[in-house]
Structures are given as C-alpha cells and as structure tokens.
Amino acid sequence: MCGIFLSEDKDLASEEMALLIGNRGGDHSSKVCTDGVVAISSVLSIRGSVGQPVLGAGYLFLYNGEIYNGDPSDTLFIKHTVDRLLQECSGLGESEGDIVDRIYEEINRHENEMAVVLMLGDRVYFFKDDIGRRSLGYGLDPFYVSSVGYTEEVNPMLIYSYNKATRRLDEWPKNSRIVKRYISLGGAILSRLCDAKYSKKYQYLRRHLVCGKVEGSRTEPNDVNAVISGFSRLFRRSVERRILEGNVCVFFSGGVDSMLVAVFLHYVASPQQKIYLINTSFGPSWDRDAGRRGFEELCSRFGKRSFVFVPNDVTIEEVRAAKEHIYRLIYPKSGPMDFNIGATLFFTARESRKYGRVAYLGSGADEMFGGYHKYKDSCFREDMMFDLFTISHHNLCRDDRVISDSQVECRFPFLDSELVEYSLEIGSSVIMMNGERKFVIREVLRRNGLGSASTIPKKAMQYGSGMSKIEGKI
Image (cartoon, rainbow, N blue to C red; front, side, top):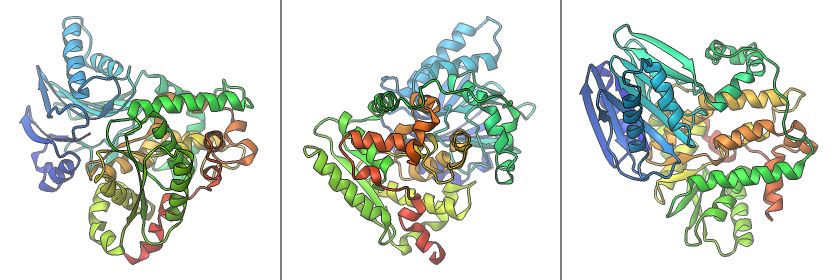
C-alpha cells in the first residue's frame, strides 16, 4: 500500500500534503523533482519492499494497491510490464495511448485493487481498478493527481491522459469485461441521473454511457442451490487471493457481512493464525452487542480457531481531537454521514494497526446483494446496479483514505471482480427471496451453521457504532 502524489506545481507539495501522503506508508518515502513535475510517495510494504517513485527509461510511475498474481513485488511487476511493452511497441507506430491501454490490460489480467500514475514524456496517464477500490483523484489549474486532498474522483471506468504542454485532459473507457458490462447497463444508470439528488453529483457518468435495455439474468431465478454454491465458491476464492500469513484482522460489527468475512477467513487461514475481530463503539451500541453475540457464535461453531474479540471503545474527547484530521481525510466528502462513517473507520483502523497491516471489510455486500432498505419497489435491481456502479465515488475512496491513514491496507472480499460480475447475473427473485434482504449472504451463513447470525438486521455503520449519537456534541 502506498500514498502517491504528482503535480506540475511544487507549491502543492506542501507540508500538509506530504504528511497525508506519508501517513499511508511507513517503510519508505521519497520526493522526486523531474521533467517539470514533483512526485511524492510513501510505501507500506505488504510483500517486497520497493521504493517509489519508480524511474525508468523515459518514464516515471507511482502505484498504490495490490495485484494478486503471486509475484514477490507488484511494483516490480508493473515496471517489468512497462519496460517490456515500451520495448515491444518501439517502432511499431502505436500511439502512447494504445501502449497505455496494453499496459493496463496486462495488469488487469490478474485480480487487482490499484491506482497507477504513469508519466511518459509530456503526458501523465492515470487510472485505477475497474471497481475503484483505491483512492485516486485529480485537480486542474494547476494539475495534480493524488491519493488524498483532491477535488475530482477518478472514474474507474476510464483511463486519463494529461498533456503537460497543452494542459489538456483527455479520457476514454477501458476495454475490460467489467467496464463493458457497466456500459451495457447504461439505461438503468442514466435513468437515475434524472433524479435531482443524483443529477449534479454524477453528471460525469453521462459522457460514456448510452441507453440500452438491461440484459436479462443468465442464472435461473429460482435455482437457489446453484446460486449459493456459485457464491460460496467465488467468495472463498476471493478470500484465498487476499489472505496473508500472520494475524488476520476484520472490521467486525457483528452484522451478516462481517460475520461471513470472518467465517471464510477461518476456512482459508492456517490453523495457527489468530483472527482479530475489531469492534468499534462510541459508548453503548448496537454493534457492541451484536459483535459479542457474533463472536460467541463463531467460537461455538469453530471451536479450534482462535478468534479474538477486540472491543475498541472511543471517547468523545478522542473524536474531538481527531475531528479536523478526519475531515481532511474524507475530503472532498464533507457531510455529517461521511464524517460519522469516516470516524468509525478511522478509529477501527487505528486499533487494527496494533495487530496487523491488512484488514478485511464487508464493503459492497449491500450494493451487490440487496441490503439497503431503499431496495423495495419493482425497480430495486436498477437501484442496486446504480449504487454498485458508483460505489467507488460514494464509499470506497473515502474509506480507503481514512483507513490507510493508520497504515492499514483495506481489502474487500465481496468486491472481487469475479464476484461482482456473478452478482449481476443472479435473478432478482433470489436476491430478495421471500422479501429477505441479503438472502444469499444469510442463506450461506445458515448453511454454514450460523443460524443466529443470519437473522441480524441491517444497521448502518454510523448508527450501529453509536457515532451518530454523539454527532451533535463534537
């Protein structure tokens, strides 16, 4: 995991910006001035320790994230990919944009959660993974691209190109399976932009979507056993990709999403690994009670596993002391809900860092499997698709910024690319079987012997943690 920043204006590389970038990685930090730009990076070593920015023959790049390809260093994997493709394409007449497309496609052959900035000559190219699980944004006049402190989110559907000579920003859609699938859902997504609450925030979506009929499900709507089997297989594969040696940390509310993450981490972790369940509460809370019950059920069901319940109690004084800093991290978000969620994640990450460098979250489960109460009329599936399509913009980048500030890398097993694609094919009648929200997740819990946990109702993070109760006192 890394913090990355590049700008034409050295004044933007302020002490405050350097601090926010530096907080994301404690193993290596560097600042480079070259070819009219300043680049800053910090690195938290999860696999091999490779410093950044990376300077190659005629290029510079910055990278944040994980590529699940089994290589000792994903940073070196990108460097070797860039070197090879630049050499292969030399003299073939391919445009730089075409070469960057090929670089992205080569990286994207592997499951990944990433943000990349690549400077080739007078152009700066940047993009993130198709779902947008890593924070990356930009600003213009003067130009900069950064993990933090930006004004515009990078759209995960696109690759961007900034020309330093003309100061022009261009963008184009990626040629990937998920992006093509999202574009095929353009009609459902564009229809939501007629709603005033979405129209201003998501106007940028209009540029690359076209109206079209939403494709029908390829899975038999009532074939519950097939859906549960398919989900379980893909979810386990997702967790297997993301598991590390050593301690395992889960952001644990006791709700069905974090319970299922804990269950499958148990299945794939070695017997010696401890699983720490980090449960944050701002005073007496729903999540504390649900978390303890969930912990007890996990221990009862999987008696040989060492689950460790970590009650993380946060005082109002601690929230007040961190308030200004949390607002800097959630920016460009600024609303009360964003602050409450950001504060909960910030303090959970701070506690989690005592036990490890990586933490697992249940993010994406509501959008993929029908968790929100607003999914209730005949168009609920289109609402789910819109929320999944925009999850990077409204949730993930904010969450990445506040969690990474404590030098913790967040991983999202539900948002594995294969599982996202699979969720779009599940029939609506299974998604909301007998009116039960998140039926698929609850049914998997039931089939794995956690019947009590499967009945826990949805509780939004800001309410479950008790953060909303102290909102007016800070």
